[in-house]
Image 1: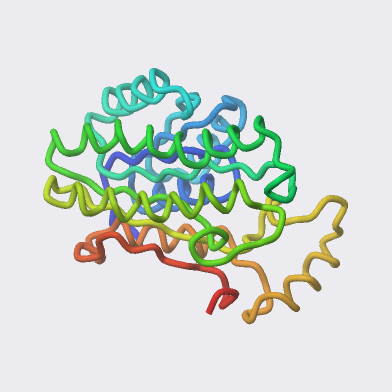
Image 2: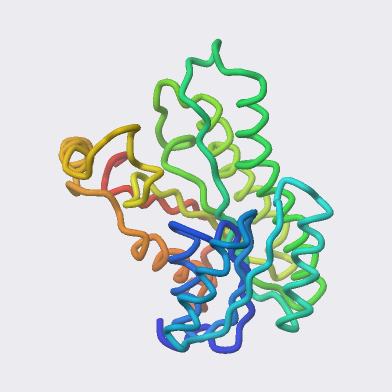
Length: 254
């Protein structure tokens, strides 16, 4: 989408690696001014350096812990001060805690999963939408998962519950705020070609063979494919798309 987002201010949480980094690069290539947020300043600066090396858009790193309300408020304030506004927000932070049956999930792992995958996303939306509705609207894209509302996997109860809630919360927020000019949608990736989709000790060849057997498409999605869907949902081409949860998993949940 060359030049689709020229001059637009975009915030990407979890922008230091994986899907978040690909989304940030894609927005920059489309002309946006991009702020990447997350806990690791080092990886955020790496994303900014990649954008600078391509000579596209403009980027800034804003370290923040999205599970802490004052951090999120400060993050949105910093982005809007730096770029003069906030047109698009992509909420991408996510964690998978060690697999365990529901009865064996530790309270610490349960809280960590819900705090990061759900509460952190809600806090991000709270402050992003709060700014957008007071300044003419905007677009929000949340990154959920095909595990949750669309698919269940044994041993991932905490992640499943959190990501299913992200899908539901996205739809609720979309209804609450479309009248404010804020358009909210989600993407739900399946296996993506990132370390998060690998099993402990799994070789690339073994991973490829496993995914060929599990996914009708025969492979994991690329981060570029997920980024393309995010940009579409945030773009003027999707102005009547409200409250959608777009599953991108190569047919795994078809």
